[in-house]
Image (cartoon, rainbow, N blue to C red; front, side):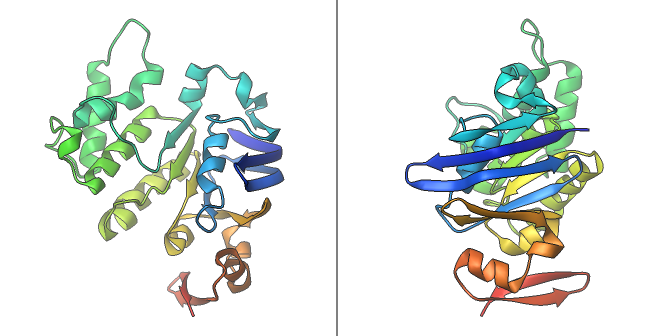
Length: 255
């Protein structure tokens, strides 16, 4: 079973300390949300977990191996990341962009197979993008582009999915139904999902674990039901919040 372990991890960018001496384990089948105020280092921490930047101190252990020793190709088969914003460097169609998710699995001398194209078409259809395969990315709305990027991440078929603000540009339907269905698929497949979330109530809806970044390196992590208290979250955001029940869940509103 896949595990990602932080060992006394410290992450800094400029004068910001996202975490200090963080030791914890992300395990298969868990869905985590990383929460905190703007500028506290959430995206920087996520990029560090992906191996895209070196930690200030400490180590990351992926399946009993230090993450920085895992070859790039193998790492790309294990860890996938959805960035907060992705600007295309070169002109590309919807289908071509979705198929980039298959690249870590292709041989150096072969392009995408018919199976890869079929898988991409199926995922685009699931994301509500059927019939748009030949559209250029620049012609898409922000929400459509976000769903293309999500499709590419799904097609990468990694055991760890890191998502930076996955609900960006998505309307209510796509936030709750499409994104919710995707997260449930990953959970049932025993993947690790770690999301930086801006919307607190979406995090409550989707996540069974939370990692709270309070600033200056202070963190708190654990099960959502244990950490999602009025006291913890009011301190996290620097504003008083009230918890309200909603069927089998609960949500928070500012007072």
